[in-house]
Image (cartoon, helix red, strand yellow):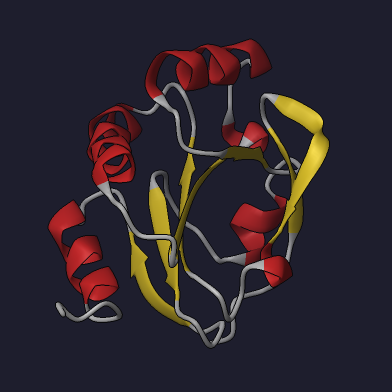
Length: 142
C-alpha cells in the first residue's frame, strides 16, 4: 500500500511543517503515533529514542506524531515531548493522519520504504526489534 501523503506542524514549533512528499524516495521513514497518557507508549518510545540518538544514517527519517484526538490535554503532550523525545515530533490534526494510516492503537509504528510503500505496521504489543529488522533490510552492511 502506498503511504498516504500528509503535511503536519511540529509540536514544538507549529509555524513549521513537515511534508512527507519531501522525503519520499530519499529516506526510509519511521513514523510512531503516540499519546502522553499511554503506558505502552511510555515503554516503546524510549527504545525508539535510543535508536534515534545512536543511529548514524542520513537515509532514515524518524518522526513521532502526537495524536491530539486521543490526548487528554495538549499540555501533557508538550511535557512528554520535552521530557522524553529529541526526535522530531509532529502534531496530528485531531486524528486525521492517525485515521488515514488506519491506526487502531497507540503506539503504532509505520515503516515507509524508498518507493513510498508501507512495508511495516507495528502495534502496541509488537517488539521494537522487529522494526529494526525491517529497517535493516534496506541498509545492508558494507
